[in-house]
Length: 172
Image (cartoon, rainbow, N blue to C red; front, side, top):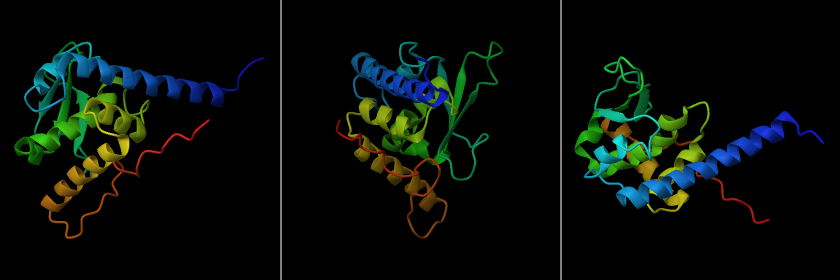
């Protein structure tokens, strides 16, 4: 009996989501809870990232609503290194920087076409020992803080990086 493409795609997404949680566990075992102090080692660890990455506290190609944007590092002629452009305000906010980076690791590893916001929240939550809903709240607080820093008067978390809380899996 053959399976339809939609079923195969769902299985692939489920497998990737499970793999991301395994990667978060590996990262925790190797680096402990992610912090500003161990971030550089984490970003260079091939057991945690498919490509080494460096941070650049500049806007790069970020859209106005983004807090981070991964790209191929233009400094690396081999194209193997990634740069994560991070909102400049995060340079002085180490706790928020860790939230932003942990959210973007699945995108750094597999690309925006392969992962979704829920996978990013589940990975980040697992990496930081937070429930996905609590992690999502921290992402929203960080994003809202950046929006407020950009002169918004009402804090809101309605950017594409925060479409809504991760869904809770239903019981079988």
